[in-house]
Length: 321
Image (cartoon, rainbow, N blue to C red; front, side, top):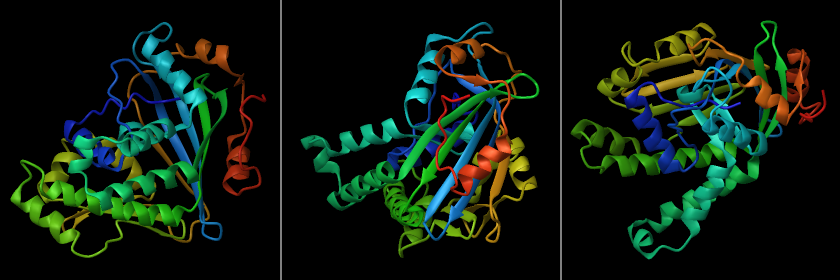
């Protein structure tokens, strides 16, 4: 149950692609034909005692956008990659995607000897990147749950994501972001304002990603012009931002930074539902999914979510109806 990640805003795509490319974690997919879905609900709980983040994903109204009847070859490939791999999406292009195969391939490319590339790489930064990718592979697990039909007869899907050593991963990510900003500061065509802002941000170790109770916070140095261009009224992100804020999320520009948070420190769990696609639902993916796995007629999402989030059932066998 993927999303096409066909980023609707070019500046958002560029920013995400640059940051994620440097971290070598997430892949922005730019396919012309791909699976999509109407909404996504994410429920999570951070267990500080075990330092584990558990996320229950629900993709609502899954369909192929390439053709009204059936799925295209690209959509079938994407469906298969999700079913057999560890791949999860966080509100399509609005946040990110985690693809275990992509992380593994990035690690292979990083560790494969290449004299020309190695000469350009800072060995300290390379070592940190390699360690970070290994942390991701060792601590993130994605398992597909059941597909089901909702009250409107739409195809929906579920996933279970567990992130162990979450605080250690966040700390390593903070260092990766500083390495990224160091590279961005000397990038060709970077503005003087951005150059100075990025270098100032990395003068001292920073906590860009922080967790407090069940609240996760992110801040990144950014100019006012870049913030307005990427997230302002003309950016194409207005609908998702409004939904995000109505459900308790914060998103703002202050002190030359983009600041974002989800959840409250004292919350037991946090739930967020955002729109993903504005296109009308069609049932063209249903028969292909049924050929590959079970599609339930109904599902008690609240019970399944609670059991996973609270650790009474760490993973659920997706093959059992």
